[in-house]
Image (cartoon, rainbow, N blue to C red; front, side, top):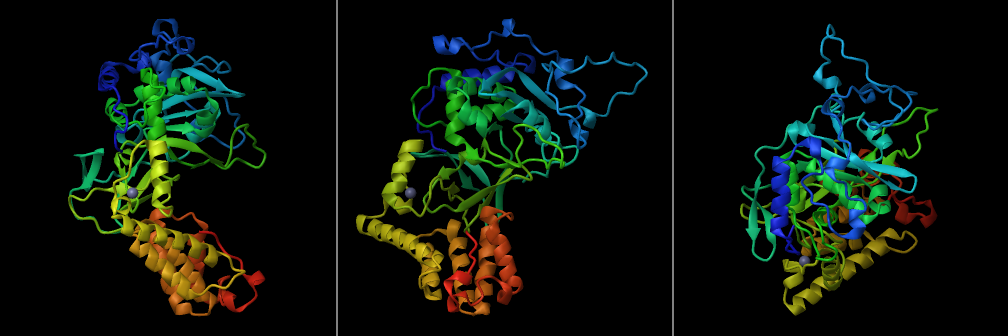
Length: 481
Ligand SMILES: [Zn+2]
């Protein structure tokens, strides 16, 4: 991501150096307490804070790995007031196997937002020593940590992609970006990265800014040194409210965060845990993905896979060596002025991609095509008005002319529906196949349109759209895409 705001490199170096030399027992020591009064009220001094004993933090036996339905959920970590004291060690007992030890450590500070208490938890050996931190409630941590992929005793980490087909390069006017080092065919997975830090959306929205910044600092500094240093080297947009090292960490996080909904464990029929939901929103930052710069017709697409907790990035077109790898930060179907306005407001930069820097008369054509795409989508999705397969074919052409490979599965979907709608099963199945081929790369398998296209391919005549254009509009039951 481009360095919009030139952060104080000295500050970053000092934090990174402190990370490299610091120990996990003094999580907050690398940070200097800010002098500002509103922050000093909450800033911990290491000597005044009770530090967890290493044997409690790092080797605390846990029940979370083998939680059975009905087991009461207690607080996590050494500050648990309800936890009975540990029995004295039994010399004759064999040491517990490594897999039975709780790999999670909890920072010494927690912060409240309303009724919820949020803490920073870190698993330093997660994903072969890459490490991960979460800011969430102790209850959610306990349950999330008990299931794959965070519980690696149940789900060993996948073998990482080696070597990656790209490298970091300084790009004039953009800062550091990623550039292909070999040909990358459309459809190839380029990366599948797990987050550096995940923040519970309730904490993200509910905590005071300074409290969240403090927990983020704790979460980042507790990661393995290499991972935290890479996080601290990410760029941050804007220069407002950057006063302390905590502000910088907060700014880096908010500049680079992605929404990452996580599926929770299914609770038993009679189980009810306050604050536990089937799907929980988190905001996460990934050091590799955050290196990808923006383009309005990107060559990569991505989605977050909750099952592996990984941000999966795929090539949507063939990429040549030396070509920059890009994703889109905004809705690419919007007109250029709207895209530029959003990018400037949120990330403080002006896009210089080909779609934005064409000559004026070509830019006008591009915007006209974007407007026509929006119009056609409205017509095709409104089954009470007349639409034809030809309009869906035109939609595909417009996506192609704009280079929007990243979204073209949406046009294929509508073409499949329209051709099936007039009873042409052959063309309908062809476009359904194309929709699946591209859409699975960009949205993953757990989407309604994937099920719908698979049903159409299996038997077009039993799909809801079969000959629907020849029937009354009320009989059609569309699936959103
Ligand atoms: Zn652009």
